[in-house]
Image 1: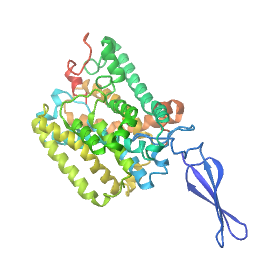
Image 2: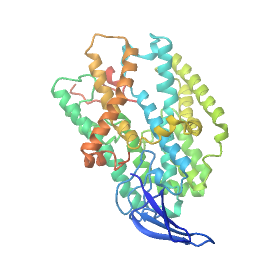
Image 3: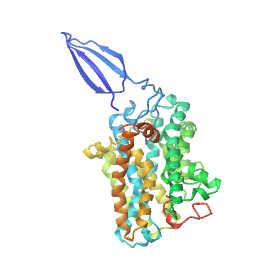
Image 4: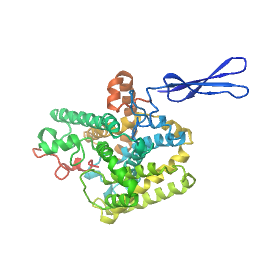
Length: 451
């Protein structure tokens, strides 16, 4: 949705010249009147239902545009407290990181494990992309979410309005997409399709079913949506986190960092500990009002270090996986957090390119990709299993090549023909065996997908 302000410039003869500027608007309101020697400037700006109220519309890293309403969420590009360059870079980061997360979830089984080295350099590239470089995606998106939540300062933060908004923009899409996938699993199982590839909700215990639906103790059925679950938990905890960071920032962030780095540690509040730390780091950056462009001059160095560290980590994982020693897990956890800076620095030169500008305008497509890519990948994997082809690199490349056109097509189709359903599914981001399946006793075909 584009917002315009009409600026009437009158010269001495009274002739008006209308100009259009991109700004939030709807009801014509005279904002200012300037009378220099030769011109009278009357700026009439259309405001959209108090959209400039400072306490309204706090957003997360996955949100582009908000829904209508008094305190409906604003997209990052609508925020007057974030300059145009930073807003565009956040939008760019969103689509780039989510596209990278798709790599992480391309399924494989024991026969196509990259750790066997069957396909040589190709297997190393798989590890580089899925286990090293794009593991940065979730922590980076978490940091952006924490930053956006408190970008207007702690004094302008409204917990009640924020939670009410996030129920609709984060929790409801999580629930709907996950339940839709579970319904598809039930249908596929009843047709005899997908056995060994999918969890079995019909034969799951009540406890395991709750986890499949709500990610209570482990990943949900639609695995990537654990991020929305953890993000919502962080939002619920945000006043406490902001209070701790405001009074003891070093102690708070150090404690959360240690928790995030320790291998094989469970804290139950969140499924991914790096999300809690990164979200808190984003809050800290917002409250301290750090200049997000201060390190842009080091972009080349930052990107080089990110790629070099990812290559080193990929090599370590390639030769020690799949059962990683503690030091490799520590290295991976650390790079997932620190690497976010490298991706942010990458956005500085990338946003200046035509490709970067186009990617920054993809809008709600990024959220659609995030929620829908895993079920589609599993469907493609099941189809692949029905063929006689065993050359896994072909599946890896084809699945990635087919996925994005299919998701872009379905996104546009739903947005055009079912706008209300689309708004709900995207959180109102309307811009452009008898034993239950558990992480420890499920088919090897599924184990590799619990990522």
